[in-house]
Length: 145
Image 1 (spheres, rainbow, N blue to C red):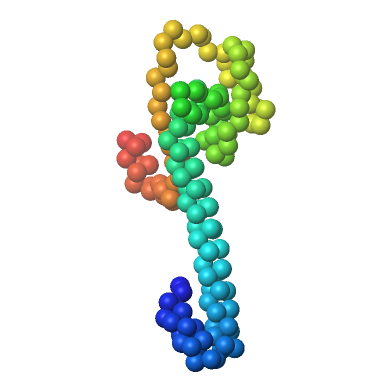
Image 2 (image 1 turned 120 degrees about the vertical axis):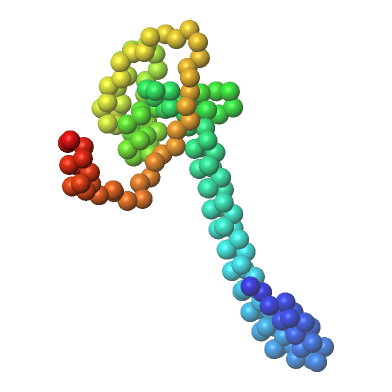
């Protein structure tokens, strides 16, 4: 943070005729100011990235087979569900009513019959497990009974 009292100190040094000390202090203040500007720019970029991620997550839709990305009234896709779920990657599948094969993971999607109405879309978020739950023997024994 800039110490604003330093500006008053610079002014007083100039009034006292101590130009050399005043210029030195001004250089220090300038360095701090430039550093703070760089930090602000970096933080603005981070906020923009987080805003883009939030927008992306709100507009990624899973229709039961594929992922679609909505921008306004346009749906982009379809995208491979396995690549999206496993790697968080949007890999576009070929358009049309032919069999769709993901070029990245090789998953094959059978052609979908033509729909007469709009698909029921569900917004899906990516689940990030915080830990792997341990399975206890008691739970296994109870399930076996």
